Length: 430
Image (cartoon, rainbow, N blue to C red):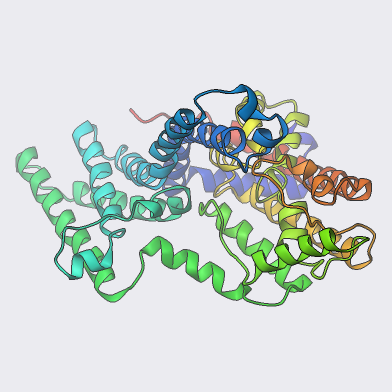
């Protein structure tokens, strides 16, 4: 397989292998693989809750779940608790695991490895507190909403900070001192320093670190709906997702108002003349997010087309159901797409191509703009068709863009599989 790979493929494979064997990146990838089962279970629970049990869910509406199911409220509460207890702790789990895996090669003592993870959790929590509860000396309130999927990048950064620092302190311990005394000293130093950093942040900033990153990602898009804005939105969303900021990233002012005006125009007038044919919803949401941001449904199809890598195909089957419902977190973390140099290129390019094609077709009036509201979990390939009241041209455009995106992903998925096989035989941590 490697012999038939072109020069570009060989260069990318070589870079991916070197990248993956870096100590920092290796710890991140191990952490992603460790928490993947938790994310998969939480995503499936969230998928069933949002699409089957909620009134705004696609399957709830199309299969008339309320007529034949029982104890819906009880199931909603249970699945809501399950998803919150898994997805809601994603950042904490990443901080713990990254710090743990960074320290693991340095010491055979499991206590040191676990303590590094525990300190990372404490540091992350110190950056996610209610500012007023600290400054007014009330009971400290934690901001749990910043510890979910959108906080994975912050969890990784905190894990790297704590893991590298803890490893450095272990390497500079005095062998003449008893281990307990040194552990107490290391832990005390880290807790004092990290809590101090958290207090400085809380004292000088009005939002949490994760909220600050999300706010920075939103500011460029209070702009008119032009092709440049749409492409910029797609690029920034893709970059944020690739870095581990999963979930909604940016929003454009007036989006809900424009959507409501489009629907009113279709309902109150003959024909299909909408006042806002070019919006984030009509272009990006409908055509460029099949399977979730990054056109990951195309990635899933490419995985099934590349037959030589059985590990990739197993991961594809695990992630099939949530991906069909546009929940991309399991595939992003399990493959993984996050921090993968090879998969970064198609992850960015596929949505850009889809946005450009959709914008052109809408401007030329070759397809109608989506006006009808879409239920949560509507399969990506059906969104344009259902949102236009059954336009076959919109469905054809969706299928064409999915096929093009799959073709874009195909060689990169093949190269990523080769790189994965090359690094899979590295020594395991004892």
